[in-house]
Image (cartoon, rainbow, N blue to C red; front, side, top):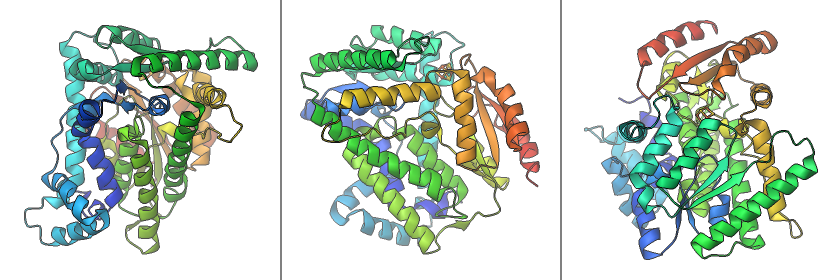
Length: 449
Ligand code: SF4
């Protein structure tokens, strides 16, 4: 039986988010061909401008065809007739008579097909001779664009201060000619007012380019509408990170909980290409989690140390949360909050949405995506304190010269100043060196005994 088995089957919202992620290909085809929408590729947490231009943001891995568990696939027809709640109840009943154990494996299948696809994208990039020492995240993104770039109308890019990332973005031009860039103001501008002015100009230029590509006008109202949706999504996301994850009773086992956080880390990048639907799923997810805790469905986790594993957005070894669970701990993923993407963007009748978006981007760049080691260190310390975690795992990604070089020093500082165990794990590709990682984690978890 899968370690995720019992937990997820009656967790409708998780199934919905997983279903929308894995079946993106059909959804996106329909949007592009029938509704003539523009598909704009995005990465990290930047879908807002695309939605505001009545277009579709997409993390291009979702244009791939995934191997989808038959039960999850059948859900689509069942839910349109019965609704998700009833379908979920039926699934729960089906699980009890499921001699083939098909239902039990729904989440495991989601995880394995996602991981397999990420590795496939990485391999595709390598086959196409990208420089061998790039990090997993960049190679996977290359692969996604090599594979599906011809169906993408434009790429929206934020010039973060990782030189490898910027080189990658630059070279995407050969695959997706329409490149929209939003540059960050130079680092040495200490004057906040000047930085804001530059950021506002950069956003305005990007909006003009998006309008030219899509033929749609971005208005203050369309921006505000999107920010309102985004703010609610962020509130639900934070409720999961700070309310549910701090609970001594989880709505599912900690491996499933970590898997849900991983699914959110991936899907938050493009909101599964439908902001309103994503918001509804997030709202339902929080509701279901609270309800399960209230009615005692889930697991007592009071004696399991809470371990923050970060950063994972550029690729990580997902088996870690299974291993940690087996060793008696619980893993949390909170990249988007650490990096400032869960900050809300103020919206009011008189607000200036472009200026507010500029402040949001500047804030995120100061917290971490600007690849400023000092600020990133501050963000990690802040997260550790705010989440009251018991241990830290740093994910040192092979090929990353921008962030990963601070982890050894950071590990020492966390141990000395916060007095909690910290460890650095090396990552190159999913599934590689799992046994070595297991050995490392076993000694790490001994520190909590
Ligand atoms: S900062 Fe590191 S992990 Fe992130 S994109 Fe750059 S090289 Fe990759």
